[in-house]
Structure formats: structure tokens, C-alpha cells
Length: 109
Image (cartoon, rainbow, N blue to C red; front, side, top):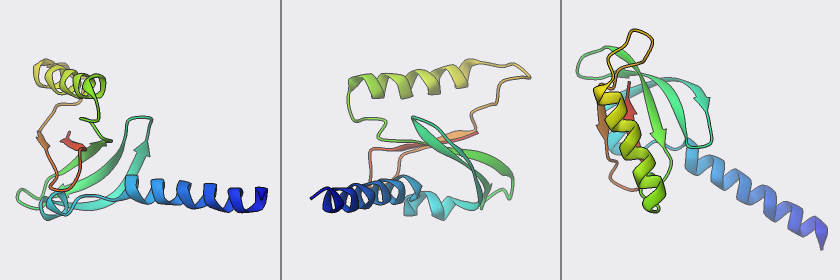
């Protein structure tokens, strides 16, 4: 039975990785993905090129930002702080995007 449970666990891990690595189609219409930069507990970051301006930026996907009140508040705070802060050592928020098909949110930085 353990062997079956291990296979199932690996399957679930692969599905979660696919889900998190997937970028919404609406976002892909605006940005060309150059490469994945990193990943953390709350999201992933890619180097992207804005298709309208041809400028490069970072695109941060915050996983399920509106799953519950705590996660929604965390995402809201991050956006508000980035909008207000103006310091040479802090990256600037260019825009944020809601995808069509998930509760994620994307920040262009």
C-alpha cells in the first residue's frame, strides 16, 4: 500500500507544480516570458518582456491571493506598500493584473 501512496503523493506534487508554474492566458497576451527567476512560499517570479512597450520587468505571481481574508489582506498590503514607496533600493510596482481563470494576482515590477 505504501508504494501506491508514494506514487499518489508524487502525482499530487507534480500537479501542484504544474498548477503553480502555469501562467494565465490573459497574462501571456500581455507579457512574453523570458525565464523563471525564482519561487517562494507565496508565489513565483519571472523575467518578462511587456509586449506593448518592449520593456523588460519582473512578473510576480501571488498564488491564490484571494483564497481567504488573511491572504487577500497580505496581497492588498504588498500592492499598497509598493505603490507608495519610493526608494532606490525598492523595486517599483508598474502594474497589477487579475487573470481570467484563477484567484491568483500578478504584479509587474
